[in-house]
Length: 311
Image (cartoon, rainbow, N blue to C red; front, side, top):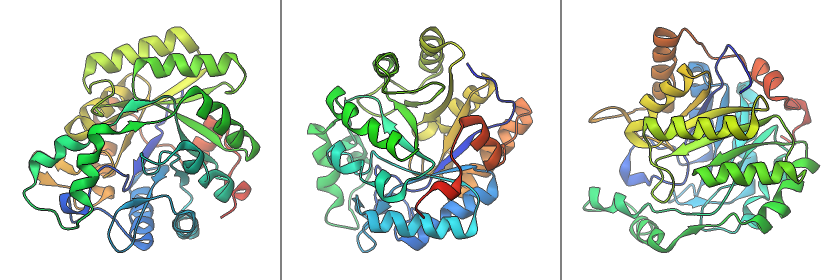
């Protein structure tokens, strides 16, 4: 694994998993999403991971005008690395989701390393009523949702990253996705060093526990040696334990309302910045590591810099 003393700390501000009923703090409009991203950066995040939603209903969408508006607003107020998703709304085909890269030419964007079942439907059990008509069928529909990212899809979308100088952050929801990344690296569709994101706790992917994080790290070590770095997402209540474990291992972490709505047991987070600040404090106290500046992260990950973007 590549060594970096400081911390790459990402914040995923809204995502496509949680619905407005689940938290009044979930940002919906472009203004809210940008404001949450800027505040998260002020709290210590050096990368802000961006999805967009219908401003009226909060439903996840792939609207590139909204992506452009959010990214432009963030850029005006913050030096954080703006990282749009190419996962978008997970039922959309990859060839549609990738459109954000040519539109924004971002420094970095997420890139999913394989197909999985993507079950959000267990969340239905927690709520008796929903604020919007779309929420219940959206969650129910994930019983039959395959989050599609085939080898053919990846052969199509990875050259789009390359053409626009955008670094892919490789989202690995299970161990097989690490082997997919190695296959694509061997074929020249990816270039080292890689930046991997271990995504633990999605219903359909690898479980969110310490042993699985250790296993993902060991496999990555075997496959990539010194040619990779990694970050971790721990879904739900596992956000802080797994994030802190990754940081103690020399890796990096992501927090945010996309992944977890709670600051602590029984207490909804009031903002993304609160989640960032908590992990910053835990990391400093227990590991001595602190967030790098955005420019230090750019140098470590070999990003092209904000002047090379289209926003």
